[in-house]
Length: 441
Ligand SMILES: *Cc1c(COP(=O)(O)O)cnc(C)c1O
Image (cartoon, rainbow, N blue to C red; front, side, top):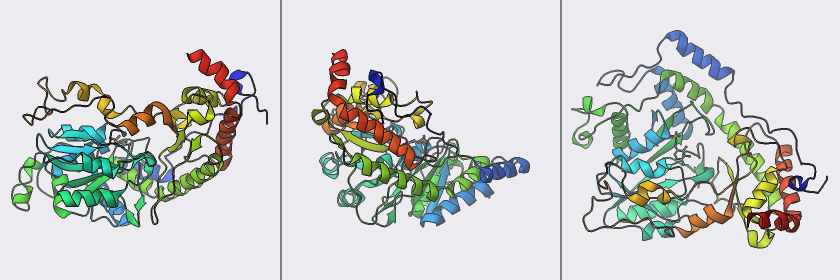
């Protein structure tokens, strides 16, 4: 192999794009056509009665998901953002309640609290797993704390034993944001309902999808009923349903359609194969990268745990390689054709900006212009200054790399191309630094 970097005029490692994802097959086509032919695209009715819980396909999809993993209840919704909002409503969050969450996640993991007047309090992440650090969670607890939203980031289960233990000692609820971790187990138990409730995203970019969609899971019958009410205009149906625990529920319309549910059931059948492929690819890539100085692959999982590899995280140490992260990524990308989309991009830097740096937190004006809900607790001043979560900021600014290539239908040969490109760039780091890092200054 020619070892001269493509960005300096050498020949690239690869000239053909990585194959695209192809998510829909014969089973989805058949399922969708059956619903179209029935002419019944949704059976939901927004009042008490037979169809308050949706039609045949919606119920079958929910049952299939619940049974596959042994969840007590599964409640489908039209997105996982909706699911998180429903979950916050189900646990009874009120204006001024504090909800501890990670700043290193998709924004909805925190925003969901705001819809009910809850105040997101950001705790830092663990530098190895990128999930909430239990010590930081405990430090963030105040008398106003009501819940913890824990994210299984990049498909790796968070430290649930520690986090649920803290929640138990302080009387807090735990919502699991398992959007990136469908079918994942933590110490032998399926994630999603190890805390009070949680769920999965079914948007197009996730492992399996219904275009848009989500699935809430819980083993708590009262929480399940509250979720069903909030999903579907609960104010019309809560009366006399199951007593006082269910009153004070207003609902939205967060319903999944029959068409989506039928496709979703077919997608669920593909999940195991998807996770097996990703694990194979991740393990292969990990073995190649582990030997490269300046790179760190994720640590092994705890016994009985699995992961979904939504994307594959790599830590980068510029002090060891002698090349800035930005120049490194630029040089690796030059070894491949220009990506067609995110899923075809060999490497990206930093994931998302720490959520508290977004202007709603910086200006503390989520709803209206008077400062709601950050003004709900007289005498308590909420500040979201830079430096709040130093580990997260370090990952964002300097250390974290992600590759979304650990996915079907890619193969070990594709992983080898990525590892070859990375090796090539690292072995030429000093000449690359002289050209690229200096140009940046
Ligand atoms: C995708 C995602 C969401 C939001 O899910 P949608 O179905 O797109 O609304 C929330 N949290 C995390 C961690 C996600 O990755």
